[in-house]
Image (cartoon, rainbow over all chains, first blue to last red; front, side, top):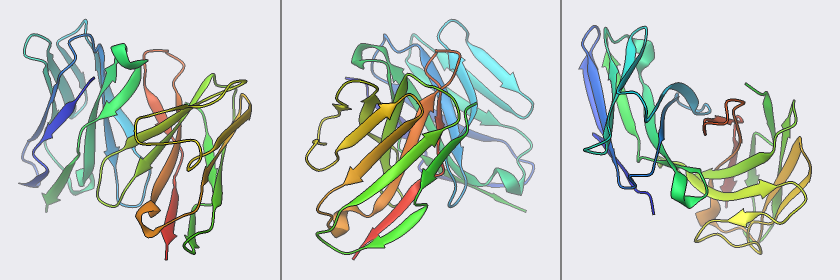
Length: 113
Length: 115
């Protein structure tokens, strides 16, 4: 079945720097890859997603890239701000497992002012 | 996206007891999902709650431990039965988005502590 690996587990950057979080997946049939942000004590919030028919998607300071051949996708946050500090989860839609979302292990991002 | 309400938001429970978590959605949804998030961990799917049929459980989760009801298209409950400290987690209800591509939206979660 689908397996999603996420790296790094923790990431600390200075305010204004860029942050990159990477995920790999195992099921070549997976076709949808969302990213969630979870602030402390709150629910996971969908921040951006990408479908397998595109290679990149941007939304203001965040972007996601997808390499289907290598089966990996990444989240890029530019001009980081302290409010970007949170745990970020990637996920892949396991098409061959009834279409359920499989989550990565999470990355705790800390943006230092 | 749908508004998803869960209750209780948190509770402290005694070992051996059971607790039922309720999830209410402000619109009709076909599928509802229950996730568990253990402290400092990722999200693990417990089961898919189907209206009009039994829930579909993931490997490692069984109906006797986590019975689920889905009486209509806007409501579901998850019961955590015969609790032990290992069941201390956040339990999250989620529903799919309207695009049908697989995005999920989560309720606020129910944080259970078992003593």
